[in-house]
Every structure is written in structure tokens, then in C-alpha cells.
Length: 251
Image (tube, rainbow, N blue to C red; front, side):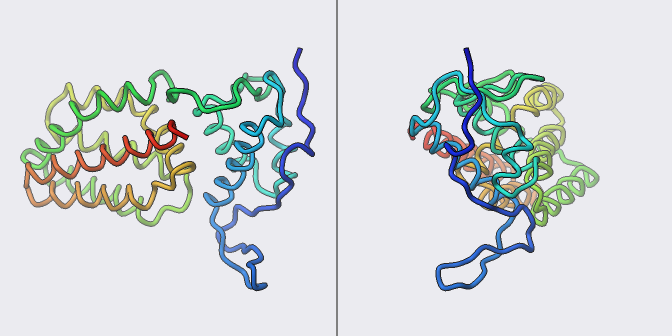
């Protein structure tokens, strides 16, 4: 038998998902807060409550609308936080029924759509590193311009959901630019999992800015036609992703 959570069990904070909004600082000033910061704060509060044993296993969380009102954020921010709770194995969301607590500690692996994080970490270097190297040799001007457009959008994108979709698009575009249809097909197949992974890493490990820098390094090497540099840049990016995931799981 499940029961709905008591809203008092979750820290009552009020956040904004507007980039122009501010929060009271320790000296009475106002510090800008972005939408992703609001999602991070909601996720952190939920995670603390779950891992702190404030909920029994099987407890049903309040509805998205209720949580959004409680935290003073939009439902999209709540959905981001809940997706990360699901990915960490703390909760399960059942369509039409709600989100339920299924564990009080992070799982040994992350579920990213139909794949696990460990499966992705093991497979991606064998696909994306050589694909980046080939892209530096084989990319067309049209493919290069497409990659530039994606990276430029990522550098200026403030919406977390839009950014993770661009991230997946970048990796897919690099694989297509390799001219190897097998690489392109495999990366396309894992695209949804890549988006889930990026979303979780951004929310839990604050990876977005560093990912942008790593993507720029890959792009610059591809533009220069430097196959070795492109492969190394992609390897460094995937290694950074792997370290961030290990850090999440070790917590």
C-alpha cells in the first residue's frame, strides 16, 4: 500500500525559473538565478529528503502541480528534477499514477532510456573517438557549418531541455560527418540515452559549461582537419563524462 507524501516532509523553499529573477543574498543583495539553478535546487532538496529517510519506500510524491506551487517554480522545472531522481534510481514515474519512491540511495548504475550509463561509457569511446577523427578528414563544408551552428546555439542556450537536445545533435552530427554509416547509425540509436545522460549530469554535476568547452575543442580540431586532435578532444570529453558519472554513483 502506498501513501502520498506529506508536503511538510520536503524543505519548503521558493525558487524562480526565470533568468531575470533573483534570490536574497546573505548581505541583502540579489543574485541572479537561472532556470537550471532552480531545477538543481529542487532536485537537491528532493534527493536530501529521500536519502535522509524522510519517505518510506513506496511513498507517492505530491503531484507536479503541487510541488511546483510549493517550490514556486514551473512544472517543467519539477519534471527536470523528477527525471533526475528517476535516473538515479530513487524514484519511478508511472504514467497516469504519479512518481513513487523506490530506493533511499543512488543505484549502482543509471538508467538512461533503454541503456545504462555503464553500457554507454563502455561503448561510446569505441564509436565516437574514431568517428571524430574521421570527421576531421572527411567532413564537408556543409557538415562543418552545421556543427558550428549547433555549437553556437549551445553556447547561448539557457533552456536546459533545449541544450541537451543540441548536445545529442552535436554527437550525431559528428558521427554523420565521419562518413561511416555504422557510426552514424549507432549514435543515432543512442541519441535519446545521450540526452538523458546530459540532463542528469548538468543537473547533478553542473557539466553544461565544461561540456561546451569540450565540444568547442572537438569542433576546432574537425575544422582544422586534424584527425589526431579531434580524436583526442573527443576522448577527453568522454573521459570527463565518465568521471562525472562515477562521482554521482560513488555518492
